[in-house]
Length: 462
Image (cartoon, rainbow, N blue to C red; front, side, top):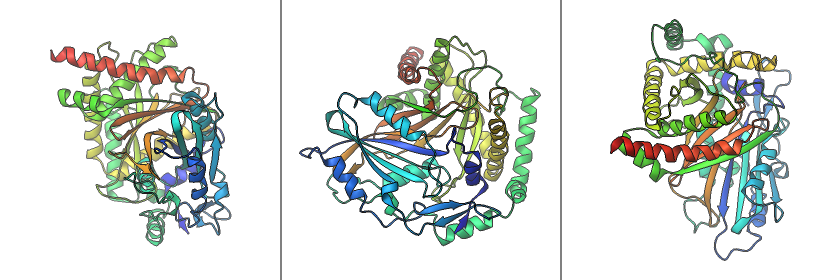
C-alpha cells in the first residue's frame, strides 16, 4: 500500500470520460519466416499464462474513506480482463483501418476497479504483420519509464523464443522503498508546493522571470503560459473520441542535418512540426502572426535514476516567428530551446514540478468548468520526446518494425504529439480528438516539412 505524489494524483483528478489519462503505444511486428498464420493467436494464449503479475500491474487505486487515495495490491489479477485478441477482417486490415481500430481502443477510460492497464494483440494485418496496442494509466509512470518497461518485455535477439510479459517483470522503484518514499513525499499540499528552500527559491526565480518577460524587460527568455489569443482548431474544450496519425523520418537523414547545422534532434523535429502545423492551419484558413507555443515535458530525473511514477515538468516553448525559410525556422527554434535549457538549469527541479502543478491546475479548472473554449490555452499543442531503443527488438523471433507512441490530451489541447526514436527511425505519434479535421494531412505535412528543411539547409550551405 502506498500513497501518490501530487503529480500522479493530478492525473486522476483531471480524468474524465472525455479526457482519460492513460497513455499507450502501437507496436507493429513482422512474423518470423516459416511461422504459421496462428502466430499472433498463439502469442496471445501464451500471454494469458503470465499470471505472476508484479507491481505496478497488480495495483488498483483506492479512493474509499481515505483522506488521500492510495495504491493497493489486488488480491488477484484476471488476465482475461487485461489481455485481448482481435483479428481485422480482410479488406479492412490496411494501415488506415488499423489506426481507426486503435483509436477506438484508446478512447475509453480504464476501469478503476481493476489494475489500470491493457494489452491488445491485433492480428490480420497485411503481409504477415500483427500489432500490439498497450495502454496504462499515466499515474503508473511517465513516458520514459513506460518505454523502458516495454523494451524490457521484448528481446534483443530473434533467437530468443521465451517471452517475459511486461507485467511479470520486477520494475525498479516499486515495493517497500517506493511506499516509504511516497509517504515521505506527500505530507501535505503545502509542503509539495513550498515545503523546502530549494523549491521556494526556485518558484521565486521562475516568478521573477515570468514577470520580466510579461512586461517586456526580457525577450524570449521564457515563454509565457495562457497568452495565445488566436482561435485555432488545435485548442478548446476536450471532447471524447480519438483519432491517430503517424509520420516517420530516418535517423540517418536527421543526423545529416544535425551534423551540418550543429543542431539537436529536438531542434530539427520541432522545426518540421512548426512548418507542418502552419501549413495545416493555412489549409483551414488560419494564418498565425505570432510564434506557435507548445507545451513540452522535461525529464526531472537525475542521470541514471530509474524511479517509478512521474517525475516530469511541463514548460512552454515558443517556436519560430512566421517565416517561409525552414533554415531560418531551425535557427529561431534553436535559439528558443537554448533559452529554455538555460531556464531549466537555473532553477531546482522541485520548482519546475510545482510550476507544472500550478499551471496545470488553472487549465484543469477551466476544463472542468467547460471554459476552455473561452480562455486562452497554455499552448497550441503539447510535444514530447521519448528516446527508445537504438536496435531492433523481437518477440519470439518476430521483429518489431515500428513503435508509435499514443499519448493523452492535456486540458484545452485537442492535439498531442509524441516523438519516439527506435531502430534508426524517428516516429511522430499524433493523437487528437475526432473533431480535429484531416489529422492524416498533418502527418503528411511533417514528412514534407522535413524534405523542405533538407533542401533549405543544402541551399544555405552551398
